[in-house]
Image 1 (cartoon, rainbow, N blue to C red):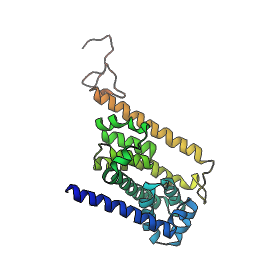
Image 2 (cartoon, rainbow, N blue to C red):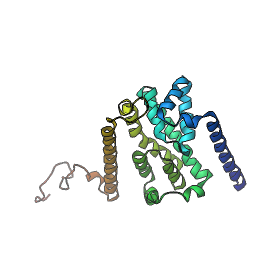
Image 3 (cartoon, rainbow, N blue to C red):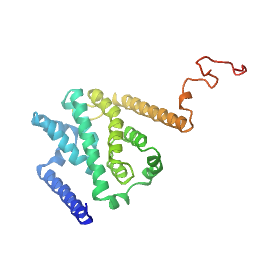
Amino acid sequence: MTPRTARYARLGAVALVFVMFGLAWHLGIFTQAADPKTLARTLVAMGPWGYLAFVVAYTVLQPFGVPGTVFIVAAPLIWPWQTAFVLSMVGTMSASVVGFSFARFVAKDWVSARIPARLRKYDDALERNAFQTVFLLRLLLWMPQVLHSFLGVSKVGFWTHFWGSLLGYVPPLLFVSYLGGEMFDASGKMQPAAWPILAGLLIASLLVVVLVRVHERCRQAGQAPRCGAASPWMHPRGGSTSPRETP
């Protein structure tokens, strides 16, 4: 692609974004997506077309300002948890790809100048181990717009971002889809029982992060096979010896 063609492609992408925003504003989608209750009511009224509307609205609106939690909270209020999980995964991944691609191919310089310093500290980790870092960031932070942008202007490859994000999203989205009915009422407001559930999710996520970090440090030190339950005095053939015994 020549520089002139690339310039026209960027301008076309920007124009398409503005057109979609204008259309969404004209149809009142921003108002309907203001809270889970309103969104749920709108999607139920659409019948089977609600599936498509959910994914399209999530894809178009989330990367540019509408919180993704509005969609993933609304989904289990409308559909069985299995359907809610699939639609939440498809919508979240689509929104992530749009946010990543917009930052990388359309407005890279503008976005790069606005990345918070707290995310810049992950630049070195992304260069050393991109897949693992993307996975952990998605597992802990989920889908904030600024994270889409940060990964888009980083050196992470598209498919590394895609698969790392996919795996990182699975635990929290499965968790919310399955327990959404216990965490939120019909209006989308958080119930008291949600706090211990969210605390459990946070603890589980942090535990995964610790285990991944420990394994990575062991691997870098060339000790991965011995990390875990293996004793430093374990005999090479599977037996064990006392630290005072000699082979």
